[in-house]
Image (cartoon, rainbow, N blue to C red; front, side, top):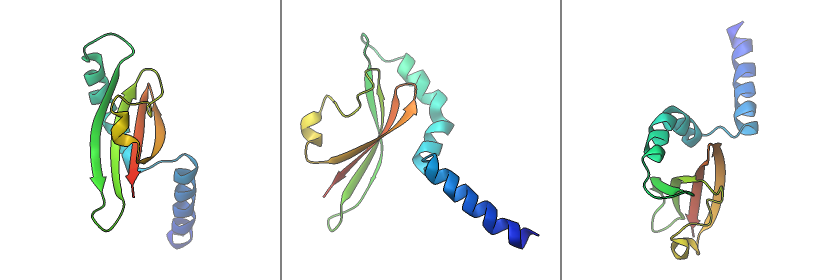
Amino acid sequence: MSVVAAPVVTIGLLAASTYYQISPEWIHFQLTRSHYMELVRNLPGPSPKYQEWDWGETGGAGSANIFHSLVYDETDNPLNRPEQSVHNEATSSVRPCGDHFFLVTDTFQ
């Protein structure tokens, strides 16, 4: 039975992860959400608040450089960043995670 069920379950999980856009970064955020909520509660200054955390990078001299960030933005416009000139040459993608949190990926060719 498991020989028949395993491929069906695997294909179903892959289809669901694609449809719901579940990625390792999204899972990481869900597991650490309470930590980031605490950091946001302690942000100084008036609203709207903005904070960006570095979540790593990949790439090198011969390939595209990809930078991942977790962004908290109360205006819900995470691509309008304070250091916008740094990101002008990048292709950026944004994935909302709820509660004003976003996963932002910048790709430099």
